Length: 272
Length: 280
Image (cartoon, rainbow over all chains, first blue to last red):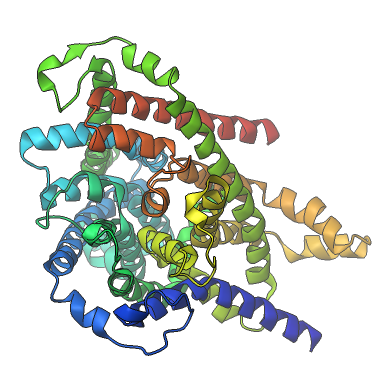
């Protein structure tokens, strides 16, 4: 009994601590413009004005389109490239696997800011500045390490016997990968896709450095520039509403895939 | 023999694109950063571009900005990683031990992980903003150095403790229960068991978690950008580089800061690897 009370208290404390900032943003997003400055945790007369207002703002709607497009394309490319690399590392006897994993590890420790200068000047020369492709390229590179890492550990959990029997039946390595291994690895691929997407979706430094207009500015960058709207009245409610619109969907997805994500994220720590 | 060769070729063929994408977008630009850092080059006066040798480095290392930003980066890194480690460890133990509500616990800890850094930075900024937030009252938390540090660290701790906890949990689940039971039989208290049994057993998980988070914290940018724009002495090294490169268009100086930051990160990583080797 005592144990049960202690357990529940711990869980509740953690729940309040993790959810309070979200609840606060929800509350702020529901406050009418006139009551934004009341300094209270809960909204006095909740309204959806901030949400409806967002969709009349091209700053937000175009940013949302850019975010979805850029993140989806970058994630898809990254996961496909990573599937082949991870399969080679997990299954083939070739010397490059150490090199690929080592490069991936170095890249996760790499300060992204060191690329901002050269990419900024290079993209300006090549006409990639402020374009979707200009963001997709660095996003693919920076999301590959995590994708390769996760997929390699997922592939290793799939019994070799599966593909060996396929190969006995005359399938090539590639056919075995596509027809036998991939279907078995679907949960792992989905988890990898989700975590990779999360990284691109929230990326901020490249998004503010390599874009300048609504043509390619993503939501995190657009949010930062919302504040500049007017000097005296900051659109707190609008920022809060926009922040939730891009946060809630990914939080829900992550929670749905909770078990697998915990397994995926922790698989590296034990071996490392 | 032939089969081995085909397999090797297939391996390179399959892993090649990934290797190419990871290196092409990093190695080439990094070499360019090094080259640019040796030039006196400002995009606002491109005509005056000239080779400057180590001039940029001299200018940066003799300026107050670099040392101020280095110390604020170190302060933010050490405090946030330190607090995250203690809280993350407690949280990992809780996730490991709690029976009642375990599913809920393991679910809610993922919430901060899934929230965008920009969003958590805004949430905490608004919460502490005078007359908007519910926390701070009339005191302008982000207007003074130490209170601004507090808000930034709090934001970082909220956002990344779950990651730390998950990494440590991965270590905890590998410790066999019998070891604990044996220590218990020998009369070791809970505290002793933690120090003598649990921590030594999961040392590698601890090192990996600390390494990843330290390097991550050292590159802190998003939260500072949203909350203070580097004001009141909270500017970090990433922000300094950004300010030179994008705001002032001082490509030469900004690149030199990037290179120096890169060296710092490499030194931290090397330090961790060394400490790890020395222990095991």
